[in-house]
Length: 135
Image (cartoon, rainbow, N blue to C red):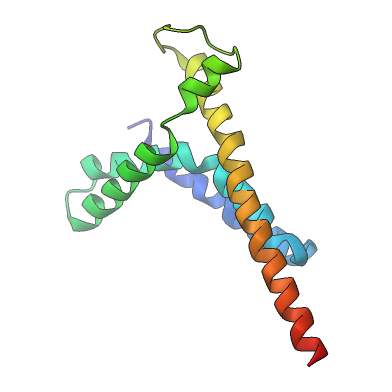
């Protein structure tokens, strides 16, 4: 039940998108992509818990989306945390501090990845717009 509020994290990249659309329209996709990448792992866990709490097809579909997203996005957080020396090798992950470290490492990695994808979209749209102006 404590994982259910993680679904509210989707408001972070949505609000960043609207902020960037108003103040930095040339970087709106890179900013919102970075924000989405930073929250994707805990948000996926929040979606995954819906499979148990919403007993219908919608809960099952959202829960399976969260399951596969968690499976894909959180596969290397522990390994990177050990590699960078944040956690000891072969240590059992328990307690909030271990999970916070792992989620922060994953958030930085996925924030950079989704931010780069957003930067590519921003660059593509800027080039498309400049080509349309010249013609």
